[in-house]
Length: 112
Image (cartoon, rainbow, N blue to C red):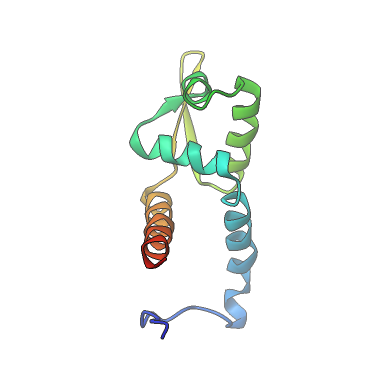
């Protein structure tokens, strides 16, 4: 038996249509393992592109591309410190979304 939490979902009201595509865009961006790894790093601390690239063993260019996609969906933000660009999660909702997805996966793995 599947347990569904009793939370009222805002869909499919006509006024809520404006939220569907942005939500789909977020889930699409989150479908890439590299972007999930980046979010995981940023969940622990703010980091520059070079530090992220070094941590993941990837090129600066490849990480910059992934960060652009994460920025486009407002999952990460950046600040400049001189010439250095520092990235962080956009807000607590991103961490909550990340934590919920991880909890769901862990729950399903434990059921196997």
